[in-house]
Length: 341
View 1 (cartoon, rainbow, N blue to C red):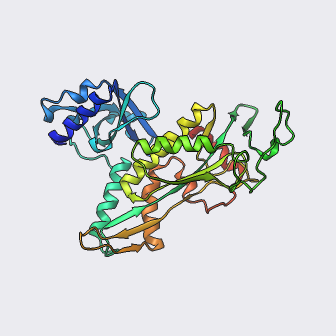
View 2 (tube, rainbow, N blue to C red):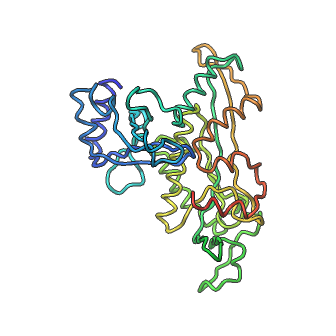
View 3 (cartoon, rainbow, N blue to C red):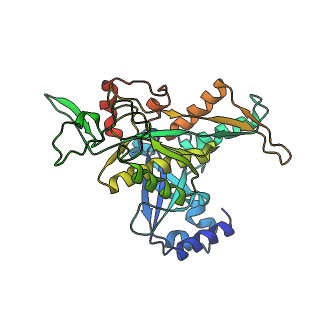
């Protein structure tokens, strides 16, 4: 952290009338966690070495999935100034900053911090001989469903899940007062124009919000399945940057859907009768030397290694990274995961 970076953040807070600073970090399964502080704690940095940028701020690591035991719960977050973005979701002007996790005594990076894992992977690519390139790029293509209703429960004498979408092919005969039709049939959602595609404006709103936090979006469209399957593609980047953007992507998709009284999920499949979600990856490597523009496509083994690292950043990665594109997934695999939407 430099004085120039601290001044840049202070200026951003003042220029945008920021009232809340939201500190984000991700747990081991890949879900963003957060808590908020006042802007004063970031803008008053007369003594930079004793500020939150260097000393960090504490939290209870024993309450985070996969982290610490209760007797060793103290952890600290160190904000990364390069990740500061105006939060496009919050009504109150909020500055979101992604943090790194460190041990409060040794100040060493926490080994279970997914961002630290990604950094180590990037350093490994540079230091190893697995390729003559020194930089790896990743371009995930994430897919998701947007539902109008979702219910699930597990009791002493029953267990079920229920999802519904106004687009669902199974609703062609439902009384909707009136039912206007235009329900994409099974595996025919790719990709007729509206009114078959009822989510065009919502996806457009999502990508406009994504662009506000610095993401470069290439294309969005309805996907193959009925009932609101969507895809938004973002431009490739280095591993850590792409992983941070994947979390921004999911955060924005879920919250924009909620604005419209809908729910978005990245679970791979909600039914054995419909097309499953996938997270297709594109991996490229190349040299960053000023006189070199050579890029090389990563071999399957290298791509798998890198994708496995990136998978730490997705709460649904255990399913979606291993799901072949458009492969059916049994309904029994969907229910236990609904609690981690």
